[in-house]
Length: 345
Length: 102
Ligand SMILES: [Zn+2]
Image (cartoon, rainbow over the protein chains, first blue to last red):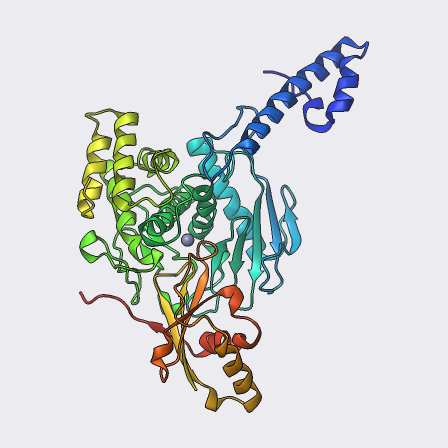
């Protein structure tokens, strides 16, 4: 095993330059080693920064960096501003007695862990971006959202929603909006908007399943079960049975019931169910094959910001064929999943 | 003046909350402020793409003036004098059942 080189982490390049000319051979070797790492890191950052648009060509990561989240939790103190509030916990600091702050910190960590372990994706941008979680947004605010920069969590109105940090699937959902922003950047209206929402549910439920050690048969496939109040019991959405999550749920399960002009959270029921069918057909953990197929489609350069259900479906099949082969059971299962929701391939 | 307001979107965007408010029931100063604010709304203008995922959006109608159409507001628009609508919706709103039969 290589020894840890402390010079890699703590010294600026000008100091390393000086140490690299030291008379001490050990110190000189350590400094040169640190400078090599530092140069690779800076090149990667520059490549990333030079890219334009939502999609990165590939997450630029190294085996020796990444794998650990960088989280900051803010207390919005019930204000409605989207300016980051008072820092209550930074990465590595001990938990406070604020349960919302603790849940947000843990949920961001669970989500980071899912993306890193499954796809070696280093944070939402693939570049180790800091995850900002803002708790106690607004007064009794019944919502959670990603504003392109940070996640905001309301405490709920007690009727429709309760404390929104309590749902690890919800935290995964919101962070995945960030991932989508850096990938296909799906336009948030019509079918591309419903795909944007569905992708967030698809990866949000996997974050929850992985955190709870659930496979496709033990998962309830419910979104928001831990944050709904009495009016929306038992959940916001069901990926298994869209339209049946609560007495007011209007999600369609197939294209037969597609709602023209419907909310993006309504028609997302169709691709949500396609993913459920795929994952349960394949069995095991949703992140073994179904998740990687969906992730490959999301990252596919052919997926445009205004993609339709059919365009996305075709990319899931193309990626399944590419990853698992022409005659694979995975590709067959993808065909079956879209057939089940009446999206023609 | 009767005002109908619906809140759509949010992470629970497959569920809408709706309320009706009559400014005749409000203290005179509140009624004047709210009616004044309503005049400035973008009546009938097409809604744009929400500013970010899971944003709330407010749809405002005047049942006695159907010719105006609907004004669609983002969360950032529902402050100041319009905040009365938001707080009324929060306290008296009813969940709309849009669920299909069967
Ligand atoms: Zn969402």
